[in-house]
Length: 149
Image (cartoon, rainbow, N blue to C red; front, top):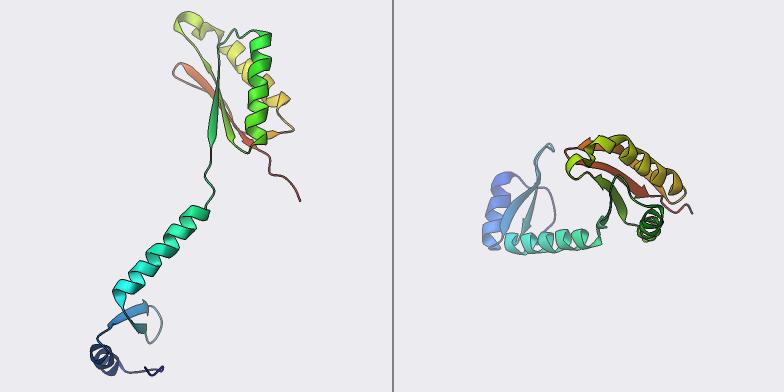
């Protein structure tokens, strides 16, 4: 097959002669750029490339830690150790305080608890979203710090 610049009529005739498809690659170019290829094979290869790109993309893992507004110190330390492990492994952390029944009156205690956790995990992660009350949950996101080279 000859490589070159052809008028549209000759390119169409050439593609029919070779029993291949004339595919427009760059429609905005002047004149438009086309290729004579097997379109099914082109689609198959494009699908393979997309699948490979998707496999290489890093998946974001979000780990959750749940507190109550009156969480005890020992329980807090235990959960903080888990949070440290999650951040070291490279997962995002979603820490939330769940208010059951009338415990919603302790909103300030829940916020203090989350801010305390954020300050203690400061060297491992960066707060992505400050504590925010949504219904019966006060949620905060912490992303792991990227390792500097």
